[in-house]
Image 1 (cartoon, rainbow, N blue to C red):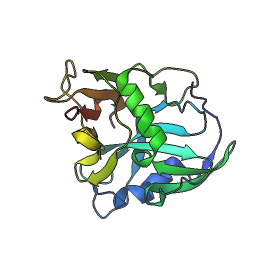
Image 2: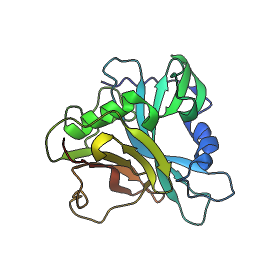
Image 3: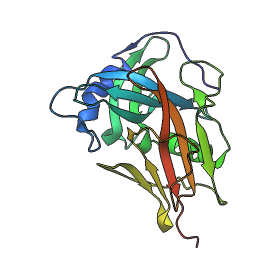
Image 4: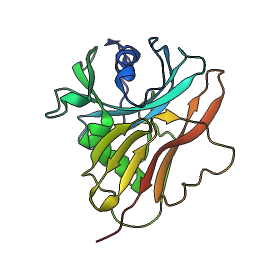
Length: 219
């Protein structure tokens, strides 16, 4: 279960993301620097206990309309070989020392655990409380077999798409949108999804889709 250390980090996660978000193709802001506020999120456990996994939700209020982003991050005690392109930044942690923060879509540990979440083999953990489940995060799936882990990652204006051999795709929604009231059924043709909740700028809570799985033809 996730252990949350009550300590400081420098620079903060919001400071790292303020510099990094404008470089992403799915960023919706303009020329002004993002004005970020934490809006929610959840964690997943690394079975080896080495890599921190967090889906952090932030809202940017720098533009005429607030935009909320989902940013899956991993935190490592050493650089991840071959992932220089996915480095968000480094920070100093008051308990764990220097940490390397990565865009988690490019980190095999996060990808594997997200697949396990969709399969129902693991549960989401609370973002800020140790040893607690986040019951607002709901994963659903139809069909059988394991979710692939050998994805090719593509970022574009629509978000981040992970594509595996034989056509299986895992689409991560980077811009989060509140869903209509009622059950959050997977979109047509989808075989799985992850939904969760976050806080709007007015203090109310909403929910929406974080990730959608489409399974390719079986061979």
